[in-house]
Image (cartoon, rainbow, N blue to C red; front, top):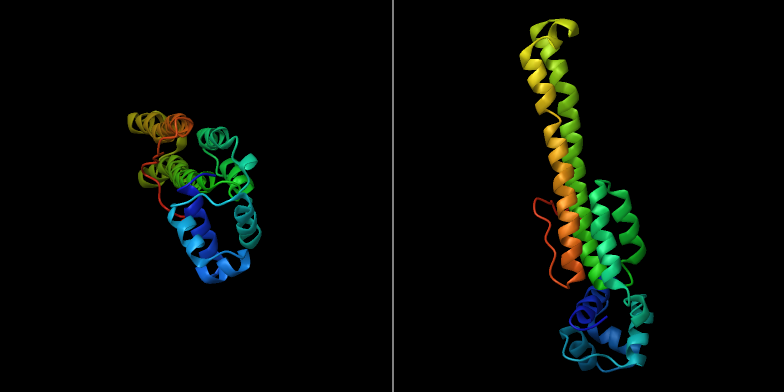
Length: 196
């Protein structure tokens, strides 16, 4: 992991553990100024300091863990094409402690997937409820309703949002995977930030 991601991750982990910079410096046997400079991204820590930070913060900062970082990011983003929360959740849970980028972008993918899953559930609910509502409102039988042009139009139009959500998820997965491979920032519009 390189700066500034390394400094941001050290700051995040230190705050999660409830440590001050002084306490972390004491545990790592370095000066407080060294911790401040690492967190601000001014310096790259020496291998021994990085090892001490990893031990104190219970995080693997090793270079081998981030060697394939962009590949894992691409896989994470492409998994969003499946419109299922479980695949990105498993990938993120497995790799989040090995890379700051995977942790941050994994949260974005999960927020997007949770939002899209809720949209799919709402769309599926409408697909089931709308015909039932027509049956009860018109007090007609299913056979008579199937002849109605309103019913036929609804049956054609109601699945459209589900298909559009699937196309949107696929598009976002492919575009963001390409952006991750090119080391560009990823964007997931229309996602609600459930996981911060």
